[in-house]
Image 1 (cartoon, protein in one colour):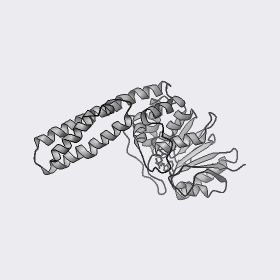
Image 2 (cartoon, protein in one colour):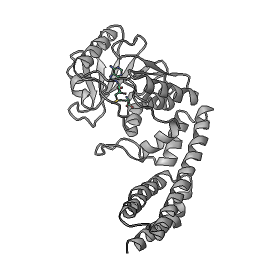
Image 3 (cartoon, protein in one colour):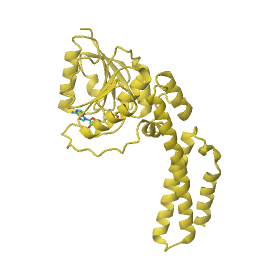
Length: 300
Ligand SMILES: C[S@@+](CC[C@H](N)C(=O)[O-])C[C@H]1O[C@@H](n2cnc3c(N)ncnc32)[C@H](O)[C@@H]1O
């Protein structure tokens, strides 16, 4: 009974020609997930209970082969697309157009959506083929662990911020670097990331240099020690809390005494940022951690 079910599932994927067409990334991502979690995992579970079962082993090999072929389509596609980023074919509008072709054009943030989707899978594969490093430093209290901003929020941020080429954008606690890299690719604005963990910072710098993005830079330091003198737009996806967040806010307040700055936040840190009396909230509900919020420094 279960063998027939698995056979039918595998056959349905094999016969779906659309997922072998490179452009259909989302359907292919769904098929790979289905193979992993509903077919391969299921067969592995069954094989633990049943002794050697020839038929199941053959089905397992068939499923692994389809998965390999589908992942190869993605890998080859990402190598080619990275080369086009590297040579400047995709930047600004042409970059967004390419993302739309592969992932659909409705990547604008949907307020009811929480978590990650296939746009995140696409961007993860697109930006780098490096192995994600383990953290090497022990995080101090109040420092938040790495978790990436959902990609649709980064697109919303780049849209909302209307960045100019004379802006300098900072991501505080930049992790593996996706925010500065994408914001630069979308807007052309120089971007910088500040990251405490050296392994993440190295990963991000390698990624930017492999994509030939000369206006993207990652600085390995504590956000309390970085030089923000050129920064005009800052982003925080709740990188730290409590006294660290308050100290960084005081540093940014000092910066705002010489020029107007804007701060974008995502996650629970929005509530703390909203309490700063030198900022006015220009977008978003600060008590909703799933909304992107925007703040502007009051006139100096
Ligand atoms: C929630 S993650 C955000 C990652 C990144 N902004 C993104 O959206 O992809 C928080 C990051 O902040 C970093 N971090 C925590 N405390 C920090 C500090 N004091 N200075 C610089 N980075 C810090 C962590 O190592 C982690 O990579």
